[in-house]
Image (cartoon, rainbow, N blue to C red; front, top):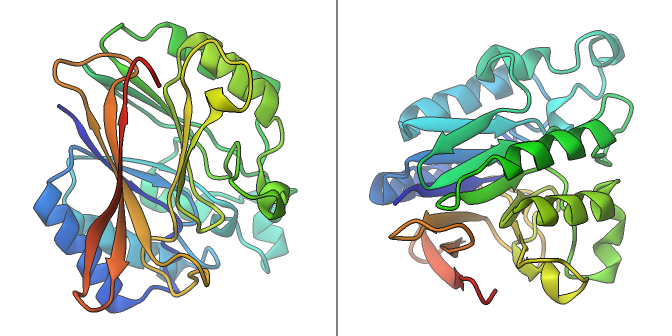
Length: 268
Protein backbone atom coordinates (compact mmCIF):
# COMPACT_ATOMS: atom_id res chain seq x y z
CA UNK A 1 0.00 0.00 0.00
CA UNK A 2 1.21 3.49 -0.88
CA UNK A 3 0.21 6.36 1.43
CA UNK A 4 0.02 9.82 -0.17
CA UNK A 5 -0.18 13.03 1.84
CA UNK A 6 -1.76 15.75 -0.32
CA UNK A 7 -0.82 19.26 0.84
CA UNK A 8 -1.90 22.38 -1.03
CA UNK A 9 -1.60 26.14 -0.66
CA UNK A 10 0.64 26.32 2.43
CA UNK A 11 1.49 29.93 1.47
CA UNK A 12 4.79 30.15 3.34
CA UNK A 13 5.10 33.78 4.30
CA UNK A 14 1.58 33.59 5.74
CA UNK A 15 1.97 30.31 7.64
CA UNK A 16 0.67 29.79 11.18
CA UNK A 17 3.48 28.23 13.26
CA UNK A 18 1.38 25.96 15.47
CA UNK A 19 -0.54 24.66 12.43
CA UNK A 20 2.79 23.89 10.75
CA UNK A 21 3.81 21.97 13.87
CA UNK A 22 0.52 20.05 13.81
CA UNK A 23 1.03 19.04 10.19
CA UNK A 24 4.55 17.87 10.98
CA UNK A 25 3.03 15.76 13.76
CA UNK A 26 0.50 14.25 11.36
CA UNK A 27 3.27 13.36 8.92
CA UNK A 28 5.21 11.63 11.71
CA UNK A 29 2.07 9.69 12.61
CA UNK A 30 1.11 8.65 9.08
CA UNK A 31 4.62 8.16 7.66
CA UNK A 32 3.49 8.75 4.05
CA UNK A 33 5.45 7.34 1.12
CA UNK A 34 4.78 10.39 -1.06
CA UNK A 35 4.06 14.04 -0.37
CA UNK A 36 2.03 15.69 -3.13
CA UNK A 37 2.28 19.48 -2.95
CA UNK A 38 -0.17 21.02 -5.40
CA UNK A 39 1.01 24.62 -5.58
CA UNK A 40 0.96 27.98 -3.86
CA UNK A 41 3.91 26.90 -1.77
CA UNK A 42 4.65 30.56 -1.05
CA UNK A 43 2.70 33.74 -0.54
CA UNK A 44 4.70 36.01 -2.88
CA UNK A 45 7.43 33.80 -4.41
CA UNK A 46 10.13 35.43 -2.27
CA UNK A 47 13.45 33.74 -1.57
CA UNK A 48 12.83 33.60 2.21
CA UNK A 49 9.44 32.00 1.67
CA UNK A 50 10.89 29.29 -0.55
CA UNK A 51 13.62 28.74 2.07
CA UNK A 52 10.95 28.26 4.75
CA UNK A 53 9.19 25.73 2.53
CA UNK A 54 12.46 23.86 1.99
CA UNK A 55 13.07 23.67 5.74
CA UNK A 56 9.51 22.46 6.30
CA UNK A 57 9.95 19.66 3.78
CA UNK A 58 13.23 18.65 5.40
CA UNK A 59 11.49 18.34 8.77
CA UNK A 60 8.72 16.19 7.26
CA UNK A 61 11.29 13.68 5.95
CA UNK A 62 8.86 12.11 3.46
CA UNK A 63 10.81 9.76 1.14
CA UNK A 64 9.37 11.19 -2.10
CA UNK A 65 8.00 14.66 -2.87
CA UNK A 66 6.04 15.69 -5.99
CA UNK A 67 5.52 19.45 -6.25
CA UNK A 68 3.94 21.68 -8.89
CA UNK A 69 3.85 25.50 -8.82
CA UNK A 70 0.80 27.58 -8.08
CA UNK A 71 0.01 31.11 -9.20
CA UNK A 72 1.49 32.52 -5.96
CA UNK A 73 4.82 30.83 -6.78
CA UNK A 74 5.36 33.25 -9.68
CA UNK A 75 6.60 36.77 -8.77
CA UNK A 76 3.76 39.26 -8.79
CA UNK A 77 5.52 42.57 -8.17
CA UNK A 78 8.89 41.75 -9.77
CA UNK A 79 7.71 42.17 -13.35
CA UNK A 80 11.13 41.51 -14.90
CA UNK A 81 11.50 38.19 -13.05
CA UNK A 82 7.96 37.20 -13.97
CA UNK A 83 8.70 37.80 -17.64
CA UNK A 84 12.21 36.35 -17.84
CA UNK A 85 12.31 33.53 -15.28
CA UNK A 86 8.94 33.12 -13.54
CA UNK A 87 9.78 29.77 -11.94
CA UNK A 88 13.40 30.43 -10.94
CA UNK A 89 12.67 30.62 -7.21
CA UNK A 90 10.50 27.52 -7.32
CA UNK A 91 13.12 25.58 -9.25
CA UNK A 92 15.91 26.52 -6.84
CA UNK A 93 14.08 24.55 -4.16
CA UNK A 94 12.28 21.81 -6.07
CA UNK A 95 14.51 21.27 -9.09
CA UNK A 96 14.05 22.01 -12.77
CA UNK A 97 11.08 19.70 -13.41
CA UNK A 98 7.80 21.63 -13.33
CA UNK A 99 5.61 18.64 -14.18
CA UNK A 100 7.07 15.78 -12.12
CA UNK A 101 5.70 12.26 -11.87
CA UNK A 102 5.80 9.38 -9.42
CA UNK A 103 5.60 5.73 -10.34
CA UNK A 104 5.04 2.77 -8.00
CA UNK A 105 3.61 -0.69 -8.49
CA UNK A 106 0.23 0.44 -7.14
CA UNK A 107 -0.01 4.06 -8.29
CA UNK A 108 0.94 6.53 -11.00
CA UNK A 109 0.94 10.24 -10.12
CA UNK A 110 1.33 12.88 -12.85
CA UNK A 111 1.88 16.59 -12.20
CA UNK A 112 0.46 19.20 -14.59
CA UNK A 113 1.64 22.83 -14.49
CA UNK A 114 -1.57 24.82 -14.87
CA UNK A 115 -0.05 28.21 -14.04
CA UNK A 116 1.05 30.64 -16.76
CA UNK A 117 3.28 33.70 -16.54
CA UNK A 118 0.64 35.76 -18.35
CA UNK A 119 -2.16 34.77 -15.95
CA UNK A 120 -2.14 36.17 -12.41
CA UNK A 121 -4.78 33.82 -11.00
CA UNK A 122 -6.40 31.63 -13.64
CA UNK A 123 -5.00 28.26 -14.70
CA UNK A 124 -4.88 26.56 -18.07
CA UNK A 125 -4.49 23.06 -19.52
CA UNK A 126 -3.06 23.12 -23.03
CA UNK A 127 -3.85 20.63 -25.78
CA UNK A 128 -0.30 19.31 -25.54
CA UNK A 129 -0.60 18.76 -21.78
CA UNK A 130 -3.96 17.04 -22.15
CA UNK A 131 -2.67 14.65 -24.79
CA UNK A 132 0.63 13.93 -23.05
CA UNK A 133 -1.06 13.10 -19.75
CA UNK A 134 -3.62 10.90 -21.52
CA UNK A 135 -0.81 8.97 -23.18
CA UNK A 136 0.89 8.41 -19.81
CA UNK A 137 -2.37 7.28 -18.24
CA UNK A 138 -2.96 4.74 -20.99
CA UNK A 139 0.44 3.22 -20.22
CA UNK A 140 -0.47 2.53 -16.58
CA UNK A 141 -0.94 -1.03 -15.39
CA UNK A 142 -4.24 -2.47 -14.20
CA UNK A 143 -2.88 -2.44 -10.63
CA UNK A 144 -2.10 1.27 -10.53
CA UNK A 145 -4.29 3.99 -9.07
CA UNK A 146 -4.01 6.81 -11.62
CA UNK A 147 -3.77 10.32 -10.20
CA UNK A 148 -3.34 13.69 -11.94
CA UNK A 149 -2.23 16.70 -9.88
CA UNK A 150 -3.12 20.29 -10.82
CA UNK A 151 -3.17 23.58 -8.95
CA UNK A 152 -6.49 25.01 -10.15
CA UNK A 153 -9.42 22.56 -9.92
CA UNK A 154 -11.32 21.05 -12.86
CA UNK A 155 -14.64 21.39 -11.02
CA UNK A 156 -16.07 23.14 -7.97
CA UNK A 157 -19.03 22.40 -5.69
CA UNK A 158 -20.56 25.89 -5.88
CA UNK A 159 -21.57 28.07 -8.79
CA UNK A 160 -19.93 31.07 -7.12
CA UNK A 161 -16.55 29.32 -7.46
CA UNK A 162 -16.91 28.59 -11.18
CA UNK A 163 -14.56 31.45 -12.08
CA UNK A 164 -11.72 29.49 -10.44
CA UNK A 165 -12.03 26.39 -12.64
CA UNK A 166 -9.00 25.77 -14.82
CA UNK A 167 -9.32 26.70 -18.50
CA UNK A 168 -9.53 23.62 -20.73
CA UNK A 169 -11.11 21.53 -17.97
CA UNK A 170 -13.94 19.97 -20.00
CA UNK A 171 -11.71 18.46 -22.68
CA UNK A 172 -9.13 17.37 -20.10
CA UNK A 173 -11.67 15.60 -17.88
CA UNK A 174 -13.15 13.73 -20.85
CA UNK A 175 -9.77 12.76 -22.27
CA UNK A 176 -8.25 11.69 -18.96
CA UNK A 177 -11.31 9.68 -17.97
CA UNK A 178 -11.15 7.83 -21.29
CA UNK A 179 -7.44 7.20 -20.65
CA UNK A 180 -8.10 5.70 -17.22
CA UNK A 181 -7.66 8.47 -14.64
CA UNK A 182 -9.14 7.79 -11.20
CA UNK A 183 -8.44 10.95 -9.18
CA UNK A 184 -7.71 14.61 -10.02
CA UNK A 185 -6.05 16.39 -7.07
CA UNK A 186 -6.03 20.20 -6.76
CA UNK A 187 -6.20 23.15 -4.39
CA UNK A 188 -6.18 26.91 -5.17
CA UNK A 189 -9.54 27.91 -3.67
CA UNK A 190 -8.76 26.80 -0.09
CA UNK A 191 -11.91 24.66 -0.02
CA UNK A 192 -11.77 20.89 0.57
CA UNK A 193 -14.22 18.70 -1.34
CA UNK A 194 -14.70 15.34 -3.06
CA UNK A 195 -16.71 15.53 -6.29
CA UNK A 196 -17.82 12.51 -8.37
CA UNK A 197 -17.34 13.95 -11.85
CA UNK A 198 -18.97 10.89 -13.42
CA UNK A 199 -22.28 11.84 -11.80
CA UNK A 200 -22.47 15.24 -13.48
CA UNK A 201 -21.29 14.36 -17.00
CA UNK A 202 -21.22 11.26 -19.24
CA UNK A 203 -17.81 9.74 -18.49
CA UNK A 204 -16.78 6.17 -19.33
CA UNK A 205 -15.62 5.42 -15.76
CA UNK A 206 -15.68 6.86 -12.24
CA UNK A 207 -13.46 9.93 -11.86
CA UNK A 208 -13.14 11.99 -8.69
CA UNK A 209 -12.07 15.60 -8.21
CA UNK A 210 -10.43 15.80 -4.77
CA UNK A 211 -9.52 19.23 -3.42
CA UNK A 212 -7.53 20.30 -0.36
CA UNK A 213 -7.84 23.50 1.63
CA UNK A 214 -4.91 25.67 2.62
CA UNK A 215 -2.63 23.44 4.65
CA UNK A 216 -0.98 25.77 7.15
CA UNK A 217 -1.66 29.41 6.25
CA UNK A 218 -3.79 32.09 7.87
CA UNK A 219 -5.64 32.51 4.54
CA UNK A 220 -8.52 30.24 5.58
CA UNK A 221 -12.03 30.71 4.33
CA UNK A 222 -14.85 31.56 6.71
CA UNK A 223 -16.40 28.13 6.07
CA UNK A 224 -13.26 25.96 5.89
CA UNK A 225 -10.16 25.78 8.05
CA UNK A 226 -6.74 24.34 7.36
CA UNK A 227 -6.87 20.89 5.81
CA UNK A 228 -4.95 18.22 3.91
CA UNK A 229 -5.86 14.95 2.20
CA UNK A 230 -4.55 11.43 2.72
CA UNK A 231 -4.89 8.77 0.01
CA UNK A 232 -4.18 5.08 0.52
CA UNK A 233 -4.02 2.64 -2.36
CA UNK A 234 -5.95 -0.61 -2.10
CA UNK A 235 -4.63 -3.97 -1.00
CA UNK A 236 -4.38 -5.87 -3.23
CA UNK A 237 -3.64 -2.97 -5.60
CA UNK A 238 -6.20 -2.16 -8.26
CA UNK A 239 -6.94 0.79 -10.53
CA UNK A 240 -9.90 2.75 -9.26
CA UNK A 241 -9.72 1.49 -5.68
CA UNK A 242 -8.40 3.65 -2.85
CA UNK A 243 -9.30 5.34 0.40
CA UNK A 244 -9.42 9.15 0.48
CA UNK A 245 -9.54 11.12 3.72
CA UNK A 246 -9.84 14.80 4.61
CA UNK A 247 -7.86 15.81 7.70
CA UNK A 248 -8.82 19.18 9.22
CA UNK A 249 -6.93 21.23 11.78
CA UNK A 250 -8.81 21.53 15.08
CA UNK A 251 -7.70 24.30 17.41
CA UNK A 252 -8.81 22.71 20.71
CA UNK A 253 -6.60 19.68 20.07
CA UNK A 254 -3.92 21.64 18.21
CA UNK A 255 -3.89 18.75 15.73
CA UNK A 256 -5.15 17.59 12.35
CA UNK A 257 -8.06 15.18 12.82
CA UNK A 258 -9.78 13.05 10.21
CA UNK A 259 -12.98 14.81 9.15
CA UNK A 260 -14.19 12.77 6.14
CA UNK A 261 -13.48 9.41 4.53
CA UNK A 262 -14.38 8.04 1.10
CA UNK A 263 -13.84 4.58 -0.35
CA UNK A 264 -13.24 4.64 -4.09
CA UNK A 265 -14.19 1.42 -5.83
CA UNK A 266 -15.31 -0.07 -9.09
CA UNK A 267 -18.88 1.11 -8.53
CA UNK A 268 -17.68 4.72 -8.05
